Image 1 (tube, rainbow, N blue to C red):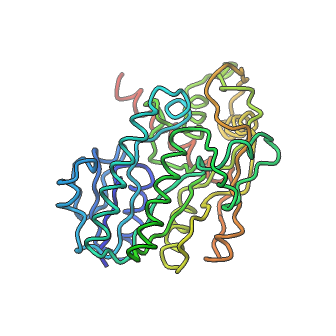
Image 2: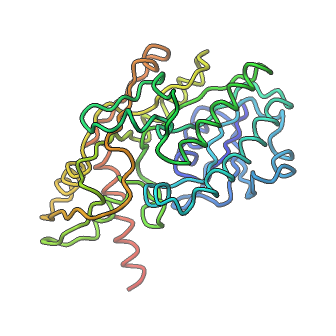
Length: 324
């Protein structure tokens, strides 16, 4: 089997390449950059811009049985919720998906995976941090809290239209805060798990770290290995509609920071400050994907974040040693 991963230089794409290789796939990866922290396991890696139709046309071809479309202009709360990157987020990602969907149809790709996001869910259903509503059917009437969410909703509809009109076999996952080792943690696009792990790792005993917002906003977080299992099960299924890929283990951001502090063994206090936070509550609702694929997460938040914290701490220690 031949697989093409778009966005293979990113966190999930890089891990996915290793997973597919372990299953015996020939894997080609495309991205604007190579993976940040380790060498890609792709058989072939192409640097290029998927917004460019001619470039896309040269590489999204009938050679591949499966295409994994993970490429997007995205980041954490500091990138998505400030409003400063809204046009680029929508324009860049929309161009990629318009190109990829058209070429997948023309080349009769057997099956394509599209990575959507929990950001598609209506903000009015996520006002209560203790009782967010994120079942798949609650995405409509549409009311995402960011342009990133609106663009992901457009992407879903684009690929589902390709399925209805051209029988393009698409599988769509709404990711909920996927985290783990080998992800960015210090370039302004990092998400909450990596950002909090970095802050704790950099802090000394007795220090205070800053938390955006009240810290009472809640989220669920999914470890990367569980995410990969879900992707593979979804791709092996016959289910076409969007499904959540996430954890149902919800935690407040303040308690999440305290969990990381406990793992670190340090004594650190929290200070809540103004900052971009998104909705008050969000957690995956997994009834549908469990029904269709029999998937459910295997890693607890404490297990996954311990692996992630120790990896980030090692990266920071190695950087200090290198600069001495």
